[in-house]
Image 1 (cartoon, rainbow, N blue to C red):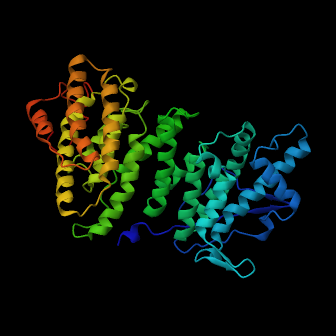
Image 2 (spheres, rainbow, N blue to C red; image 1 turned 180 degrees about the vertical axis):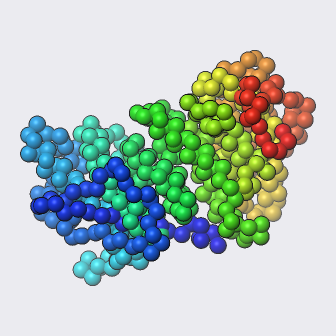
Length: 447
């Protein structure tokens, strides 16, 4: 069943009591995120709760940008940091408390608290709700608060993932890490990568790690963020490529049920989408075929290239991703070479749309995907401007005929593809390689 692949995941955190204070775990030299299968460490404690009105008020003022974390008064700074460390433990370690795993009913308040409620409370504390998701600008004081608080949160979440194997805990810890990435905390990306490195991790946890990376790269592509660490950017892109290229798992034999295959493809689609947002056709600093983002997107588009053939939505994400690759970031990248594969996919996509329109059994949000494909094709045309005229003209002609038929889907009409089919049949791309002079960047299947 699909839920086998997307079952929840969990972990818990350790805490060191030293003298009168609570010390957070160090970020360095952490254990791998591979707890024993039966390890269910409980790391929560009422000692972490902000009990006094002074502590609660201090946290609220820091979160709302009404108080500076780093104060001119060193005593104030120490007290601010102590409250943030305590708050990180309280909001994160509760994930390991089993009373929340099935929903905790409080007789006093007559309300039930679920794991999703814990995640939402955490998201409020890191300004995702309502500021960041509401597209409200943060105050500079809130930016500073997030920088300090997120370091404490990452340390706690790493501890949870290292010590607790309960699926529901692991999934929600990954959700929190993804939230930190969405809140522009670059250091959280290292922990998302560590999740993906764990060969025993369940895909429900991987899904949230991939979503965190996708949210980060989405902001980078939009020009809202830049990586402070170029090597971290490289590691992120390579990790996405490695996830997409995973061999077919033994748990999915040839006769595997359709819903289990769909579950695997659902998670991999998130990796393809994130990879398509990375912008680099070729990752800087890599050699040979290592780091060929555009090649892996092309492989994700064509059947017979991955361990398990892609779904139609995975193929759509691969097309969108290829269109988003920036030619100015790789002088040898020749996107016109990928046009026949894109066109072949579009013909299949259009046929499936027409078949489902007749049967009225819709399995895809056709208008949404068609709109996204049209936007992506416009991006491809823009990227073509950096190519020789023959390559650019070829791309422009393809984009024109492809957009014409996709617009028919956008307005819920029958989609007629003879013009697109004729263009693909009668025109070959000027480029004979995806990367100029790189014959090793090839496909297993015939072009």
